[in-house]
Amino acid sequence: MKKRVTLTFPPRTVHMPVTYRLAKDFNVAANIIRAQVAPNQIGKLVLELSGDIDELEAAMEWLRSQGIGVSLASREIVIDENSCVDCGLCTGVCPTEALTLEPETFKLKFLRLRCVVCEQCIPTCPVQAISTNL
Image (cartoon, rainbow, N blue to C red; front, side):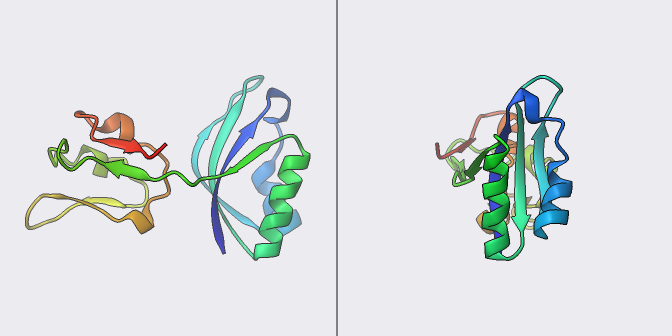
């Protein structure tokens, strides 16, 4: 099973080897989608966690017990098709290729199932046609 989560680290916990502990102690694979972590500052990680459902739940409970905020990523990317000019800039930053240009029509194609909501496309869009649903 896979779960997409956002981890929020208080400044005192940013030094913890979280992905190592998830793999070693819980047999949970952590794919880092986006990271913003610096010493003595609040850190954020967007992860896609993979593993057995019970191990995922135990891992998330352990994270919470360490003072790390865990929230399931329920947001989705929304594209305003009326504003989008199909420039393709967003396709260059999309790590999962959820955003592509149709080769025949050069129209933007969004594959929602591939999207991990890393939000890298949002600041890239020159006409602000991409946002989240929150």
